[in-house]
Each structure stands twice: as C-alpha cells, then as structure tokens.
Length: 451
Image 1 (cartoon, one colour):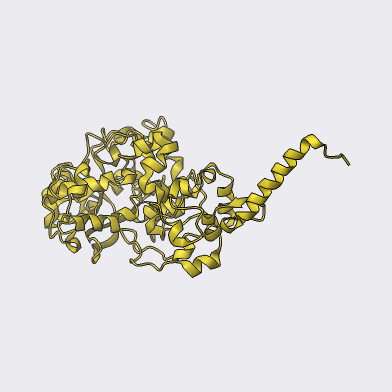
Image 2 (cartoon, helix red, strand yellow; image 1 turned 180 degrees about the horizontal axis):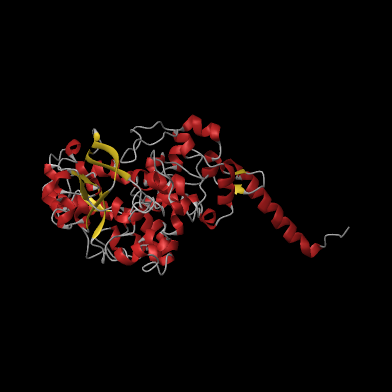
C-alpha cells in the first residue's frame, strides 16, 4: 500500500470538505440508484406516491375539438417522470439544461408552491422563441408563421370576422379568442406538443417520461390531431376502406414524406397549406409517370392524382364550436370539382374537394352570432386524401370495360350514372352557394354527359 505523503494531505483535506458540503445539502437533493444527483424537481416528479398527495385537481373540462373529447389522464400521471423515457432523458442534452433552465421556478425548493414560483411556466414551448430558440433559433424563427402554429386557422377566423388576417387575430373579441384557445388550439400548438408532451386533444401530459422525441410518433402525435381527415383515411378506419398503400406496403410514417422543413415552416407567411413550397409531391418518388400508361398520358394535366387513386374519405360540416359540434355529422364521400386554387396547384382542371366545418354561426357559443364576412372562403376545400390505392373504384373496371365507365357521367334510361362523384351547385346548402358555387362543375363538363 502506498503511503500518503505530506504534500498530498491538502488535497485529501479538500476532498473531505467537499464530501461534507454535499452531505449537508441532502435536504434539497436525493439520489437515483446510479448515484446521479437529482434536483428537488425530479425528487418530486419521480415520486409517484408524493405526486398523488400534492397534486391539484383539474379545474377545467378536458380539451375538445374536431377530434372529439380528449382521453383523461390524472394530473399526477401527466407530470410523472418515469420509465425508459425518463432514463433516456437523463442521458440527453436537454437534461443538462436543468429544470429551471426551461421551466423557471426554484429547483432547490422542496415545497411545491415555492418550487413553482419565480415566473414558473408549465409548458416552456409556449414561449418557444425564448426557451426553444436559445438553441434552435433557425427552427423557431421559421415556426412563427407555420401552419402547425395555427396561422392558417387564424387566417380564416380573422378574415371571416371582417379583419385583415392572422396578424390581427388579437383584435378579435376576447371571448372568441378564448374559444379558439379552448378548441382549435388543442391541436394547433407549439414545439412541446409534438416533441415532449401529448397534444391536449390526446390528453396532455408527458408522453415519454420527459424524453424529447426528435421524430414525433405517428399514432400518438400526428394521428391524434389529424384524426378525422388524416389518420382516418391513412389507417383505413372506415368500413369498406383499406389502409393507404404507402402504409400497408411500405410502412411509411408521416415523416417519410412530411419532413421537418415542411412541418416547422419556412418563415414566410402563406395563405394556406398548399402554398408551401416544401410540400411533398407524388412525382418526387413516382418519376416518369406522365407516360406510364394510357390513362396517365390522357389525364396527367387534367386531374390531381387522388381523383383516380383515392378511396371515399371523411367529411363533416356546419360546426357550433364547443356547442353541439358538427351539425352535418361525419360522412364518407368523394367529390370532384373545379380546381379552387389554380394559382397554387397549377395544371389541374378537376380535383378532389372536401366539405369543411365552416358555418356563419361557428362562434355562436362565444357571443359572435354570425361572421361579418362568411363568404370570404368557400365551404369546400381542395383536398388530397391520404388513402391512396393503385386499384380503386375508379381505376378497377370490369373485364373489357373502359376507365371512363367508372368516371364519366352517362345517361342510362334517365339515370345519370356517376353524377354523385361530382360537386354540383344543387349539392350545396343555400348558405354555401355564395362562396362555393364557383368551383361546382355546372357547365364545366361535356354537354353530352348530363343529357
């Protein structure tokens, strides 16, 4: 055994002093099984029994919205840090920032009230430009105008309310903004809703023990928000439909096509989602399809791909926000109309459209009897259903038959076969005609089709 020489004694005394200081500070710290120091925040949030003792009951109803009512998680379950997700979080760069680095508060205090003092913020990404932007500035600067942040929804609400656009959203009546935050914002949120916690419409709370997921989970994040008009189609939920071929054959998740550059935005405001230059295009993968077969050669410049390769898809309409909900309950349909956005989706004459939730009295429950300018937007939108199949009821015809037999309108003994595939003015409610008639196919089809 080596002897400790005199000139090494000061180092030994210093080491003993450090150990003593740490031991006298144990009131504010506990240790995990691997002897890693935990802050008092973690001491509470990793102690499930303690969280059950000190939690505050919910004072508001669970989130709601287009996807229905959110599942309920108890308050202590929403903030419990545990499991493999927490272990992964401990090894991450975000962990080294420390609790107070993002949440503010006092991470030395053992008392809940004191710990949550000091401008404490439960969801730091609500202040994403400061909290997330300190490290991810390129993303947060672009996200300000992202449609995931809600600029598209806000644009429709403000313009239909008689204002200029999303930049004037804060000028809406306070009660209407309250309604937007309680309903629309349950999906249109911030960084944390995709990367740390469940979206409010998914029940809220930590998704994986506070671990940060660089790639959001398709089912618990993407589909949770994009329920009725995304996941419903892609997963083949409706009776008589099949999952999208990109899922069933290739196993694609959402981010296989929709990457971060698109989802985070590019920093420039756009009128609507199809104006994003980062959107994926079928021809990004399916090259040389313009002359792939006779039907493509004939119609490549006429229709968007979904006209032939989509199945029926979900629609609903006329919503009372936070009231009785959709007064046109969800239904499966398939409507071809004139391209309502030819300046954005160029080269297509006929496209698929989907009925929206728009109604003059959307905000009746929030003291806005009617929109001031409801006709600013149509009640049917350009759509690209995520339920693609090679063989659909449009492309699969009887032996010896023609593709046109399943698409073109023809008169058979006084019955106009296939007419239901197209949006005519007679399909519109009276309140829809002012803004939507321009896209109906009345007078736009060959005359022989409707005789």
